[in-house]
Image 1 (cartoon, rainbow, N blue to C red):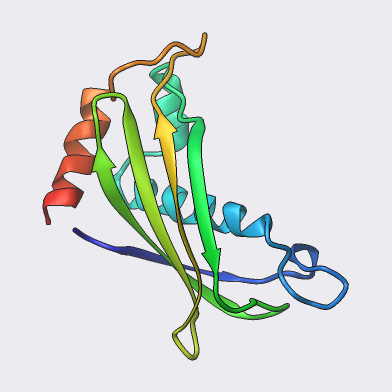
Image 2 (tube, rainbow, N blue to C red):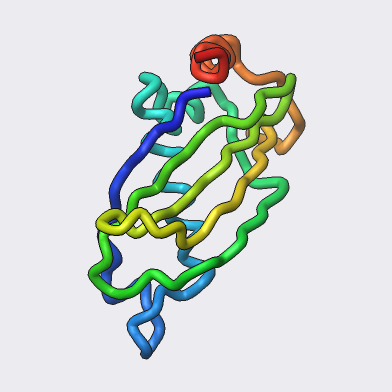
Length: 136
């Protein structure tokens, strides 16, 4: 299973008054990781939407170990845990880049749905690229 890594520097708007990243913003960091993973595969969310397929979150989990702070450079590592007929799971680990201290880990599960919200099979173009990533 291949891990994709992307960097993100914490901005002031990510933080609470104590310069600590607000917990809900980690889910935005997760989204950055999966968006860039897809982009690296040659797929964008826009292309998936152009197929009239959407990927709403159906389940999420996170575990916090240490706090990220304003101006920290983070490394977001994303892997695909599974691809089923109509869902996909992304796993994440977020590190403080300079020290490799694990700050947070978690996952999101997404359903493949059409514009009306009806569950659909994963598009073949997406499934083929994702399967290649899982098998590496």
